[in-house]
Image 1 (cartoon, rainbow, N blue to C red):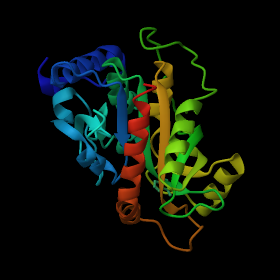
Image 2: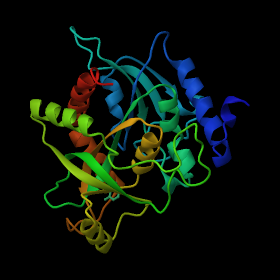
Image 3: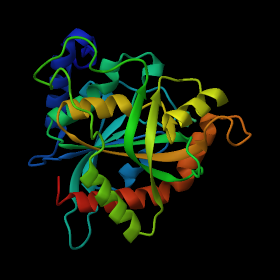
Length: 293
Ligand code: HPA
């Protein structure tokens, strides 16, 4: 099969993941063994610029689907995060952008990259996104650590035949977002004087933003944040036994909360505004993860 022809058909799930994992391994510099994967959401891809010894590869070369959404570059970058004069930093594989189910991709396709990164050796997956703020007290620009999620996408990436080589049929979801990793993130934020809140992320299919009534419903269900990504990736990461850390940038208050209509421009503008803080926090977290990942 030529490079361009990797199948994303559900029946080819394991083989497609394995093929991508092998291509990732071939792309890595000799001796590299990154154990942390980072998925950067809308407008947050520039964290790649903060890496040392960085090297990138186009998604097409490793069988990853490409997003047509503005703010999703479509490159996998290997590099060292948190490198200083006294520390070699930590090796990471960083995804600049992701695809979403609302673009018409199957759940299988959406989660292929995260599965491949885990198969390629990453034991920890850090998922970031831009999200609407639903919970009281949240403001645009807030950074929020995910402590749990609500899967309201009407589908699961695990629906269909379960391939036992990936994980169990009925995986436990009691602690999707690792408590130890969350504690580390909170300590780092405190040390850097960055305000980091904590919240529950509701994953919806989109692509339309919610109605004010839907936002009220979400609040009633216990959601603090709403978005269109992250949940499928978190589910497959736990299915494969990887640890997950999730972080949202509140790009806007959810529909009906600010008196303004929502737009994707607002989402990317807010991400741009908090980029420097977000990068500082991520870098600090990466440096601390060296010891636990
Ligand atoms: N709703 C859903 N997804 C989003 C939002 C929102 O308000 N903002 C960014 N992603």
